[in-house]
Image (cartoon, rainbow, N blue to C red; front, side):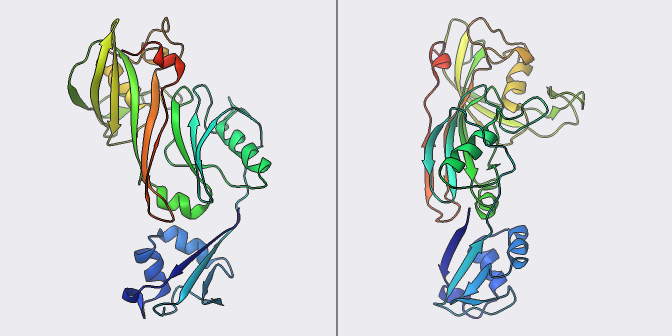
Length: 287
């Protein structure tokens, strides 16, 4: 997708190099600036081509012409709910059971394929770039950056709140601070173990019923399977999480849903909050 962005140079950057404004004013990453430098006509000052070492004038208009992306995923239709869409981001409520990216086990039946199809139907195209992925069995909010700059600005700038249903009784709130290892590099299974990557999970119990507790969860770190591994390490795996010892008699997948997403818009900087209700399978067993 072609995307053109315009900025009026503020007084504090009068006489500064273009690079300083791109990095310190707009907040682009070094990699993004380098990418723009390599494309002829990607940076214009009052309509004239400009280099990163050139000087700015207060009140001048800096135009960034972002290169068009080309999706690498084969367009294939699949059900998902669009929560929000503009020229820069696409926010999706992903259903459980839909993998994020094509792998040797999933070819054509992933969210990447579905987004490619969705954009193609609208005459658009974009590489599938997501800010924080969800496991195949996890439902909830996913934000897709529709161009390279949006992806750069979104990196690490979002906060997610999850709802999980775990086996066992919890009350009040607490934190699980335990490193996560990958015992077998050939398997996706993770475990808590010494020498692993730091992993911190904050939880608040929302209620319990029939041996299950509904939790609100936020993360300080984003390790693979972090929530699932942390609660399994406490002897209270997520309901339905067969991989980590959960039972599937009440729900057929691990009971985890990304219910809230907060982030600054990657272009406007506006603080945005998105929510997605619990899916029916989790509603049926929550306390």
